View 1: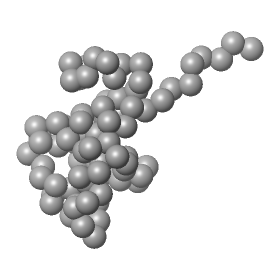
View 2: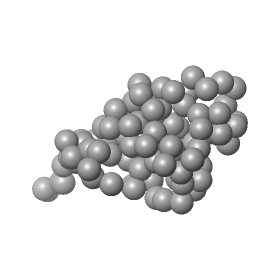
View 3: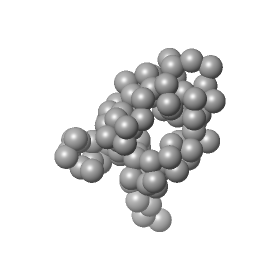
Length: 87
């Protein structure tokens, strides 16, 4: 059986993209912290740096907030070399 290549999320490029999208939409770190019911801003800063990614619930909430699908936010290793041009 010929399976397609396993898709991998590029966390650093995804973090940069998430940061760009949130800033372009006018959302601050504090806005995201409050919206995702986080106790502090550290998680959001880690998301933007690509150190960690939001859990699935927060990813889904952010996609709703930004009005786009998860696939439009996530950057895979296949297209990470194009970032920031692959919007």
